[in-house]
Image 1: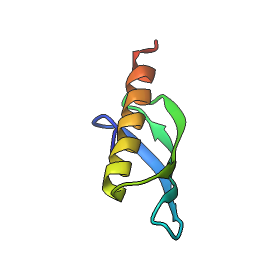
Image 2: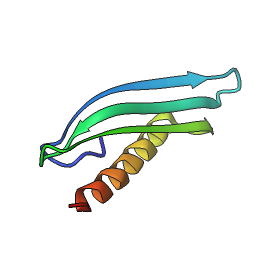
Image 3: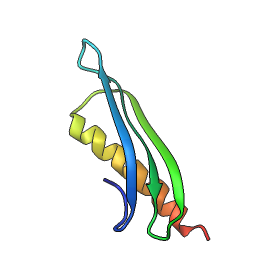
Image 4: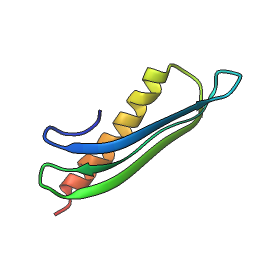
Length: 75
């Protein structure tokens, strides 16, 4: 999620909750190949968050998309 069409990613997610249902961390780290064949490594971690796991994953996707969009504007 968060990548443009024709982009590819190899990634690993991670989730760790504590006893109070607080997400101690939820993260995704990966290597992205953009449509123009440039590559970048990206890691996003959300720490000590409360809320639905799906909402936190959408936040990670939005952060990923912001980084990728900015990177694609570079020559």
